[in-house]
Length: 322
Image (cartoon, rainbow, N blue to C red; front, side, top):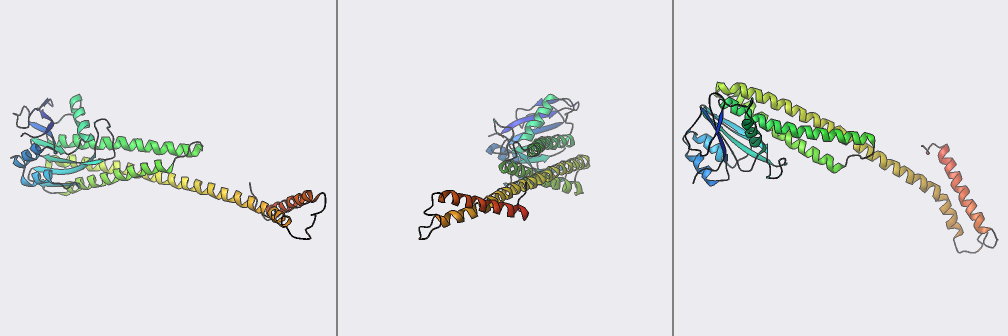
């Protein structure tokens, strides 16, 4: 049983790329990139038996552990990075999957259990050509991690736009943002921040590893700086969202206080009138105005005057405001 090859490319010295139909096909270039389906049993067997991979790198590719990490073994580098998964009909999901990478001087092997966005972006860039060329492991790593950061940057721009739109709606007062929408944005931002923090830690450890091949060091330093900058943008959006949520909470509190204030004033105005009507509603002997022709009118006037005096007292004491 052969490995589950999703796609593969051979890169020549002039930057040209030719497709690879089988993992064991003869090379037509100096560098090969294979993207494999790790859910295929043939892929696992092929990785375990591959002579180009050291036992440590093979173990990293086959391990069920999905936390982000890296190791250097001679001239080979292995990494586990996180990326957003995609569905067949939905390109952007909030599920995070593990992308496992094995990098040698002549081969880059990427594997995944579920479809990931970065692999699609990298392949599309290579198929379009242009500046996306691969001449060795450094360029391949730069292209792959650049695809991950490009996808995250696009999501971050969308979330930042959502926060700004919600802020404008709050200031206009027509359609204030709902807490459910703000919670969704906050959850996505926190998810991206954790992803970037782990990935930046991987590249910082690689940068400090004295055994890292010298050809990869500039790329690792570049990606570490890019990840730090992108994470700073995410933190900025989180701060803006936090201020927006505080403003929403303040407005909700103000509306609640205003409603309670109106209810308290109405209660205070009705209370004397209620006392008057309760007094005259008692079925006891000797009730004033019980036998007169204008008893109801007089009782109503007394209730109205009592409410008016209460209103005047509240105004004089400073409890009434606009």
